Structures are given as structure tokens and as C-alpha cells.
Length: 262
Image 1: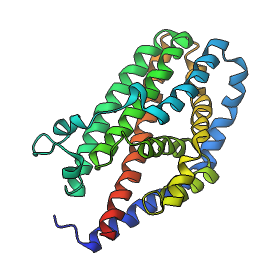
Image 2 (image 1 turned 90 degrees about the horizontal axis):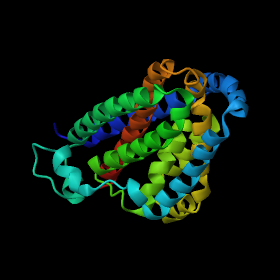
Image 3 (image 1 turned 60 degrees about the vertical axis):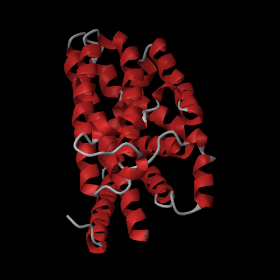
Image 4 (image 1 turned 90 degrees about the vertical axis):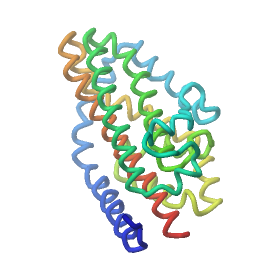
């Protein structure tokens, strides 16, 4: 299919409609989180400590990439029927082809997240300390692989910040979503905006604090061994799905805007 300017513009409108829908979810999300803020007071100290260590891990990820970096060498496996070895080649692929690669990655990672949540849910709340860093790592790698599929290099520090901003967007309230979208919409067009985003390295702390609220369901149900299997699988799958959808939309938007400007 030929990607005309009209087609690209229409696809951009669809993404912008999705962004508006994300803002409208805030009221119900807020209601859902309120009861679980109270659960934090009853959360065992070792769980709080484990969540706290994620602050350091995310900070290290932004600075150096650490052990979370995905490799561009995976490109042939994402596009097995094409001769694609570099990000420069990816940039010229049809967006529909990029979408298909991302969809396949999402399906695969949802299965992994589901299995991971179920297996760590068997042991009750005590295995939650294992699940938290595993899910974080899976989410980061998924977003990086989505970036690669759209021709962006996760080795760049700027892209690592963009990954964390995507994570912030998923967890933010309506005010936060609007602010993050305003920043990300200018991410590739203004050097000043890039510097502003890069200077907000403290922003990744919000992601971890929001994780504390999001794990409320798991804290509640994983206090009961075995029952946590079902809820662990469900919540991990849902968390991965939300993040993958956000990554696809926001990276797809950047690639579309790049082609509209060229």
C-alpha cells in the first residue's frame, strides 16, 4: 500500500484520538486506585524495599542502559521475510510492516508476562518481590524492541528517556498525561524540548511510585497463595498490554510525523 500524505495524516488523526481517549480514562482509574493506597501501609517492609531499589535501577538504565538494553542485532528476527539488518533500512519500511512486527512482539511478550505473573503468584505475597523487577525488565525491553521496529535506536540516551516517558504516560493521571504528551509531541523537532526532557531525570521516580499503586491488586490477592496465580497472570498481562499499546502509538506517531515532514 502506498503511503500518501493523506493516508499518513489520517493515521495521525487516529493516534491523536487514541491520546484523547487515554485522558478520559483518568476518573475511573483514580477511583480504582484509591482503596489500594491504604494497602501500602500494610505492605511488608521487604516489598517496599524491593520497590525502592527500582528507583536506582531505572536511574542506571537512563544513564547507561545497564542490563536492560535491547540489541539492534535482533532486527532480522523481527523482519524474517525481509533483508533488514540496520535501523536505517527499517526507517524506509512501510509503516504497516512495522505495525505487524510490533503486534507480533506484543503477543509474545503478553504470553511471557502472563506466565511470569502466574508462576510468581503461586507463592503468595512473598514472591511478589521477585515479580516486580521481572515485570519492570520485561516492560523496558518490550518498549525498546518496539522502538527498534520503528527505526529508533534504544542505545541513545534520548531514546532511553523516551522509553521511561512512555512508562510514565501509562501510569499518570490526566494532568500528567497531558504534560507528557506535550513534551513527547515535540521530542524530535526542538533541541530545547529535548534538553528539557533530558533534564527531567527525576521524572522516572514517578514511574516507580505509580507501580506501588498499580501493584495494589496483587498485594491484596497475593496474600493468599495459589489465588495469586490467577490475579498475578491477569495483572501482568494487562500491564504489558497497556504499555505495548502506548509504545506502539507514540513511536508510530513519531515515524508518521517524520514522514509527513520529509
